[in-house]
Image 1 (tube, rainbow, N blue to C red):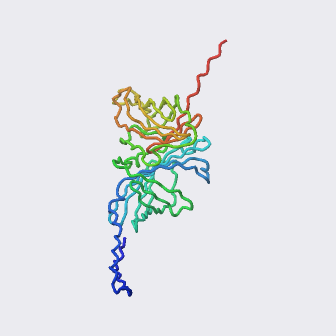
Image 2: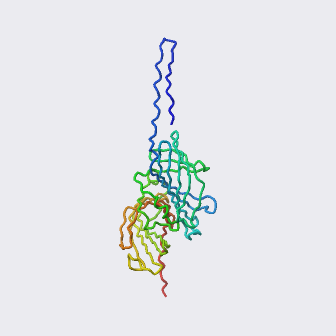
Image 3: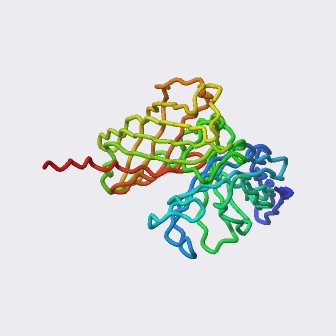
Length: 351
C-alpha cells in the first residue's frame, strides 16, 4: 500500500491580513498485518450441474486452504474433497454406485494489493487412488477477494457468473493433507484406518439454519450399506443403522456402525486367528433441520464389540445435507453418503 505524502497548505487571507494554519494531516490507515491471511481456511459448497453428461447431478465440495503470507506475497495450496451424487439415482459407470468421491489438490500463489487479495491456481493434482472415478482436470481459477475478520471472501474472476466463495478461518486446524493419497472415491463413507480428524463446527452463516418452510421429518431409522475391497484384495462390508429423534427442528440420536472384513486368500488374520473379524461402534450425535436442510454433529463414540483387529483410529465428523422423503443425503469431511429408510417388513402369507 502506498502512502501519499502530506502536503502542508497555507492559505493567505486578504481580509484581516492573517494566515490560516495548515490543515492537520489526515492519518493514513494502518498497514494490514503481514500474517493476516496466513493460516488454515475451511469452506463448503453444493451445486447442481447444469450441462453436459452430468446435468442434474449434485456436486458437493469441501475445501481446506493452507495459506502463508510474507509481506504482500501469498503462497500455499488447498485440498478439495468432491462428492458427486446422481440426480436420477442411476449408478455411475466408474463404480456402479449412485455417487462417488475424489480428492484433489491445487497449488496457489497470490498477493495483497491495496487491501484486495488476488490468488491464482498454479497446478492441479489428483489423489493417487482416483481410479476410474477421476473427475478430470478443470480450468485453473483466478480469485479476487477480501478479508472480513475470520472470513475470506473470494470470487473466481474467470467464471462468467461464479458465486462468491466463503472461507472460514480454522483456529485449531487438523489437516486433511494426509487424506489426499488415501481417499478412495469408490467408497462413499470413511474408512476406519484413516487418520484421526475432528471437524470443527461450521462458523459463520451456515452454522444456524434458517428457512421459512417447516422442518422436514427425519425421525426414525435410516440405513446405509456398502461393500467393497480393501488394499490387498480382502472383502469389506459396512453397515450403519441411524436412529434419529426429532423435536421440532432439533435432532438427537445415535447410529451403530458395523464393519465386517473377510479374508479372500484363505489366510487367517493374525489379530483374530480367523478368516474374518467384525467391529461395532456406536456414535452419538445432535443436529438441526430447517426446511429440507440438515446439519449433524457427532459428539462421542463407544466401541460395542471390541476386537484385537481394531486399529483404534476414529474421528468425529460434522455433516451437512438434504432430506428427501426416503433419503437423507449427507456430506462429511472427505466424502458423502446416502441414508435410506429401511423397507417395511412384509408379512408372510398364511395358507
